[in-house]
Image (cartoon, rainbow, N blue to C red):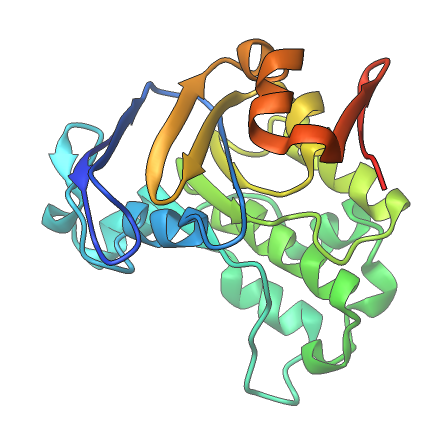
Length: 229
């Protein structure tokens, strides 16, 4: 489905990997390791040697590409101070039959529909971006820190949304180890611009790997991972 062949730039160093159809992936790594840079390379925002469904990504037209891959950044940036949440979601509706009003109710943000997007809280903006991903409905969706700025209740809602059948294939960049562990997707760990691990969730979240990548800063308590302050 998706193949990156020995991609390099100022941050990434000969990264290559392949995902099968409907395979989901978690991308982990320390700050500055190259996670967001990799995501932008995968969706063509920066030059790369990506193949998507057997063809170079660059060979698709812009319209075709919107059906195949979508990148959801870590922060919502809207420069129109008057556009409301409902208007923004209507503009984001591309390849789904789901109506914006139904999605607003599903995410429990219907009361915000007439509120300007620039006035939304950081958590509300995060939910807005998740909503646009549902309405875009690309075959592959890349989420950059989807639970950033969310309280525990909203984080649980996002987890349920990511586990639902609303998305086809997901690539999730996160520092939230509990989210990564509970989702159970294959893990790609980037270290200093290189792929240092690419295997199953079960293989990654064992004691030896937790110690290798996080040392004494993370410990496992039953089925949960916590920062040892």
